[in-house]
Image 1 (tube, rainbow, N blue to C red):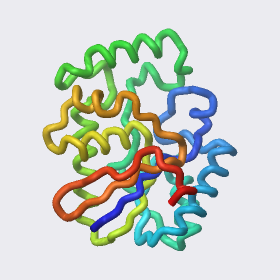
Image 2 (image 1 turned 90 degrees about the vertical axis):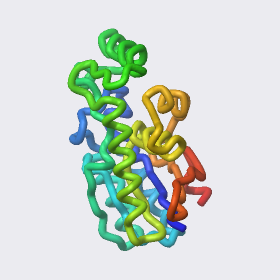
Image 3 (image 1 turned 60 degrees about the horizontal axis):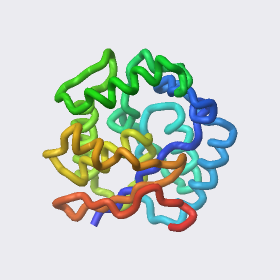
Image 4 (image 1 turned 45 degrees about the horizontal axis):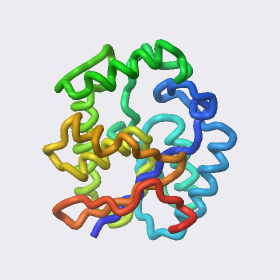
Length: 208
């Protein structure tokens, strides 16, 4: 049995200011660094054999704390980066009228297969990447793995585990619309050699 502990990165500077992330360059806030250090100390209870991280700065900084506490080198993979949002939303505060207008269009038309507002990653592309990430993890030899990634991508992973290859944009929304994920919270999943099963969502590392 393989167990994977998916961890959302610590609070970023953009999280703290309610600004849409600037892709890979957004760093952790001072509070986020503290979150990462505390979470890493609790993960030390686990028999981790590998740590895999998104290549984005906020995830890499979080993973570095996990690696330091557990004495493991961190591996990096672009499979686990956050979903690419429309450029029109980047660096804008989330309550900004234009940000909200783009968000409304995404919500209305996401059910259209292949819908793309502008330059973002489509839902189909997101879910295909989630399947590829799960396949990558399933074929790794380790039994206990920590993966540092991002909230939206974690929801895509959850939907992909739940519905398998038949997941669609509509099912993805239905499964994850109200699934909030706190910074440094965990999604825990197992793989029995055949299928994935979600065991916990938004779990607190202190309760491990």
